[in-house]
Image (cartoon, rainbow over the protein chains, first blue to last red):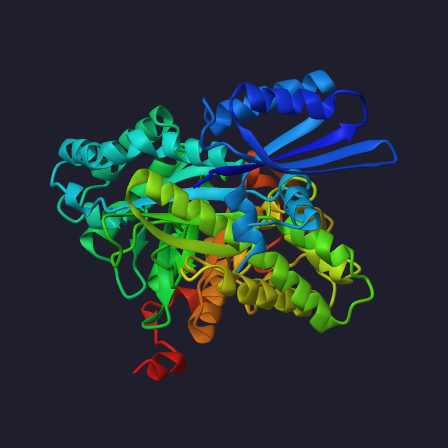
Length: 91
Length: 448
C-alpha cells in the first residue's frame, strides 16, 4: 500500500525544473506515479503524485530538500499528504 | 485515487494563498484527580497528571502538521474547571499556585494557551467558585497563557444576576492583556477548542483532542467570485467551501488523536478570523454585498453565512462540537476592528448579531473607568439572549485605562487592535443591583 504526497511546483519557466525536482525524488527512492505539467504565459505549473512509502527519508525531510531545490530553481515547491486532498475533495 | 488538476489546484490555492489553516489543536485533559486540600499539593498533582500528555503534545502536533503539509497555528491545553479543583481548599492562594505552575509548564512544553480557570455559577456560588472568583484577577493579570471564564447563565437555570455582577467586577479588575483571556459565558459547551471558553467538560473521557478550524479567506474568495449569484447559489457555494475547511479539521483531529493515543473529540466548525488581511469574517459579509459591515443588512448577511457554514460543516464531520457557529471577535477581525474604530459597530448591533451567531460581545474595548453596573447590564443583555434563544454566547470586554470611544488599543498577535466602544449609560443601574437568579425561559420547559 502506497503512501502518497502531492508535490506542487509553481514559478517562472526555465530549463531543468522537472529534472531538478525529479532528481531529488529519485535520490530518496520516492516514486513519481502521476505527473501533470503546464506552461501558461511563461508560468510553469506542475503537480506530481509521489509514492513515498519506500523513500529513505520522511516527508518533512523530503519537503526540506525539495524546497531547497525549488529555491535554486527559482520556483515555489509545496508538499502535502494526499489525505488532505482526499478529505477535502471526496465525500 | 485520482484527482483532477483543478481539484488539486483548488486545495493548493486555499492552503497556500487563502490562509486556510488549523487555528488550534486543543488537548483536553481531566485534571479532577489532582484536587488536593493544600496549594502546593494541588500544583504538584496537576503537574503529575498533565506531564505525560505535555511531553508528547507539541511533538505530536508538529509531526502531523509536517506530514500533511498543513499549518497548525496554536497548540492548546484545556483542563477541568479550576473551581472544582479548589473545592477541597477553598483558597484563592491555591488557584494562584496552580496558575504559576501551569504557566511554567506551558512555557516549558510549548503550549500556547491553557484554558480552564473557569467556574459554573449560573445557579449559585460554591466554595471552590468563591476561591476562583477571588483569584481570577491575580491569576490572569500575572500570567500570559492562562484563560478562563465564568458561566453565569444557562438555559436550564436562567441568568444569575449575582454572578453577572461578580463577573463584571472581574472584568474591570483586569489589565487589557488579561481581559483578552477572560469571558463571561452562558451555556458553555464541554468541548470548545477556542479560548477562553475551552475547559475539560464533565462528560468527557480522561483526554480528547478538539480542533478549531480557520479559513475565512477561502470563503471570502468564493463569495467575491460570485457577484451576480442569487442568494441560494451563494449559500450553496459557502456551504461547499465550509465543508472543505471543516474536513481539514477532521483530518488533523483524527491524525493528532492517533499520534497521541487519545480519543478524537470534536471539530468546532466556526470559521475563526485573525487580524491578518484576507482572514476576516466581516470581509465575507461585505463581499456578499454589504456596503459596510455594521450597516443595515449585516444581520441578514451573517445569518446567511452562519447557516451555510453549519450545513456544510455538519456534512464534513460527525463530531461537531464547541461553539460551531460563527463568532466575530471584533479586534481579531481586521475589517470588523476598523469598522468599530470608525464608529460603525455599536453594542446594540453586536447584540442583534448575537441572535444569529455565537459572537455575543467579543473583544471590544471599554473605558476601564466604566461603571460596574453598566458593564453588568451589558452582560445581562447577552445572557438573556443566550437563555431565551437557547444558545452559547459570551462577553469578552477589554477595559482600556483612560480610553474614549473610537480609541484603539493594540494587543498584538492574534488579539489584534481593540476598538473602544462607549457604554451608553453611566452611574448606577438599579435593575442589575437586584439580587438573585432570573428564572429560565420557556425553552427550559421544552426540555422536560
